[in-house]
Length: 500
Image (cartoon, rainbow, N blue to C red; front, top):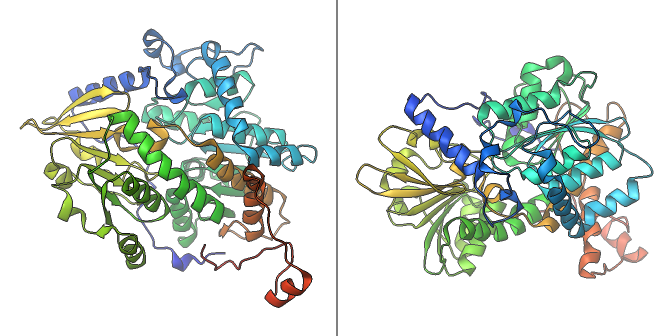
């Protein structure tokens, strides 16, 4: 268990997400841009699969929808026209997700989540659909909303609605839609949640603030993002966390594989799909050198980029220096860099002052969870012109004609603008499923109202589920060797303080 005192208190947005105060004309322009972005049909991935532009003019909240079996407890873009395509996407993802599929097969008879009622607030794509259907196979009842207004794959949401899953999400939601969808998941007639699966802390926040009587009966929370984990520690520090929570973001398998290896692919994929950038020789600054920043910087450097790193932590800064990157402040390089990538989990890392000084054509994107890393509100002003040039790509044009390229309106670019490696999501999804099973089946009193790490034994189990894919064979300790090391032959093989 991590000590609360080890985690700094941060202002990470316990206030409700909302649009900043804006002139009416600007609000209309932003609304139009969002509809255009959400309705665009492109060849990037299934994430961009949508219906017709006429259909997109109608909010899903204004439609009456039912699936082929008459089920109506959902709200998606278009269940009838997209569910078959979405089902194929889910089936493709299953083939590349060996860990979570093995877990499903091994545990489906035991039903370890029987009678569990889970509010889920995650990205909605083919890979997370595999997780959700696994939870259902293990006995759970789920209600599902998106944690990001741009990352939902509409066809996948339709496939889940067709399968009878209460799902409330579509690509291009407004902020009001976002909270409406999440509220529909929590406050269902005759259904009271006892677990939360969260990505960013919004489900936890809404239930705690609006439904305290429901929140106190929760068996536990599973949180997979840095932003959400910080919010949990903030609650714990202030005595507001009244239920146990498992921090899977800092589990070894999640941190190393989802945060590091996945980001190596995602940063290149996102930038290529949105801007057609040639990487060789580009000057790029990566803000933050945690696991996400490390993955981004390594991949960009391998493409021939000149990579700068900004950091507040001297240990991470030293790692960046030893990896061959120059550690700088953002102000030192902001006038010269071609791309700015944020990966800190913090707020206002890139400010209006920074953006005022960027070179013409500078690309700005966020790889951290929260949309607060880039101060987008500060550039939603009348003197700046927004021009939507491609799905999730906006030119922000200054009065003198200089422009910057903002991706996904400052939201999570890898989930909004690229595909997701199914294998890596399998690792993360397995940790989430095991954490939910652990909290749901724990004896009363085993976990107090605090934030815990995933037990080491479970981390090792998740890794072992994925080794057969590589035909990898583990060496087994002899009894003598195990005794010499003071270990159980079956693990865990490292202490909790070991740093991989």
